[in-house]
Amino acid sequence: MRIDGKQAAADLRKQLSMQVLQLQQEKNIVPGLTVILVGEDPASEVYVRNKVRQTRELGMHSQEIRLPVDIREEALLTRLEQLNQDKDVHGILVQLPLPAHINEAKVLAAINPEKDVDGFHALNSGRLLNGSGDALVPCTPQGCVILAKRHLGEDLSGKHAVVIGRSNIVGKPLAILLLQENCTVTIAHSRTENLAQICRQADILVAAVGRANFVKGDWIKPGATVIDVGINRIEDTEGKTRLVGDVDYQAAVEVAAAITPVPGGVGPMTIACLLKNTLVAARRYG
Amino acid sequence: MRIDGKQAAADLRKQLSMQVLQLQQEKNIVPGLTVILVGEDPASEVYVRNKVRQTRELGMHSQEIRLPVDIREEALLTRLEQLNQDKDVHGILVQLPLPAHINEAKVLAAINPEKDVDGFHALNSGRLLNGSGDALVPCTPQGCVILAKRHLGEDLSGKHAVVIGRSNIVGKPLAILLLQENCTVTIAHSRTENLAQICRQADILVAAVGRANFVKGDWIKPGATVIDVGINRIEDTEGKTRLVGDVDYQAAVEVAAAITPVPGGVGPMTIACLLKNTLVAARRYG
Image (cartoon, one colour):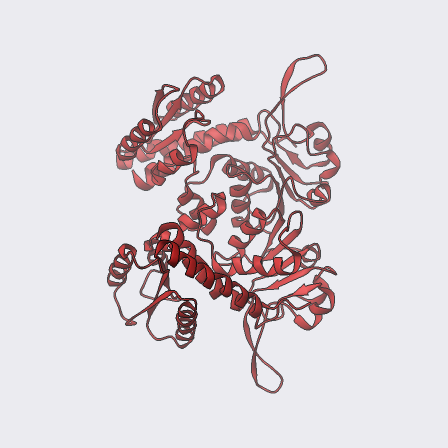
């Protein structure tokens, strides 16, 4: 079975748009997301455009702030501080990557944790790790869990989940989320020995390594649920570029019970979960 | 081989006492640890007494604040805020458990993260998860890693570590530390299926479940390193109470290459790592 991330994202957006309406009716709050884009990286512009469009479609306020590529770090931090104070701004997202002269960690740490809809602030990471329930959780991992549940149902308890990759954005927070879902969780990475053998134990296998077709068909336990976070651009034999995941889809689809395609799997969920975080922030702190 | 936690703790304290001296000579800073004890729980009094004594033995300042069991939460928070501001206090530890009328989470969150030598504040948890290098790390997990390295050497890279238990104090932070050491890490817990089989994969097996003799000898891979975090009081056949770990030591010692005893294993390391954190805090922020 193919797990349809586009449909899952559409379903989530539909839910969210009703909740946005409800929040407006009950508390007169319209969730607002501000996206900061520094410079003119074309890929970043596409992402930001998509975020802005989808935010509006849900009935939320959307604000896009474009800053020159040579902006001083201090000026960016000042702008952030204004947004931290602004009552109408519930979510702040700084589009990465930032120009090299700006300290990314410093900028992310300067976002008010209550508005940190990317969930990258250390305070949100810590709340996630400690399970205190008040974290804003990184978007891609949230999307992965929703997609796994789309096939397996709400209860993931007792499943063995293997996460390949240990980034701050995907691997580590996803491992913590799956642990909260009562999965047994294994985190594997570039230094893991016998990776294939470890993957073959997975009821839920998540690949987040950024290497095209890295996970082979025979690494997958028959009947497993496979979530492919990778988005890799490769050239096919005719010289055309196309997007593929971290999993060899053609081989994997024969073995797995369910698998997310690339594109159309995890990707669409990420923005939908960003909008969810904006709603959560507006509800909680708005 | 028996991993001698008492000796490891003594070695660490010796190192620390030299570093304390050095910090005093170079920067005229004497690390200071303040322990707050609310009420008169006898077990807590023993812990606090040990902490105070060892702090002094290392040449650090030690302050013990005793507060009545019926203190109002507000008053405790006010006292904490004074300590947060006090330049001579580098580490603050609130001895747990607190009386039932006090919100433990709220109190822990009120400690200045720079002085949070228990490493329980969400900001420190998040820094640990994100690997930003500026966390104050919970003491028992630190001790576990030191003990594992005492047998395996500094490089744990590629080892498969299985941690049984997912508490905020031990299991989760330890899993993150082992991941930083480039171990492949599996976190198992009460909902894990085929636990014995999962444990048998472990090059490093850590038990932190709080159940006497829970881990059997045949759950251990021959040649594994076993770290036993449990401290359980049981009655023997003659009605005498004694302390045992989470691992069936007699059986395990026949299979494992190295194992920590209980008592005399992880226990002594915890206070030593608390003193280490106090030194780190004094160096970093003093």
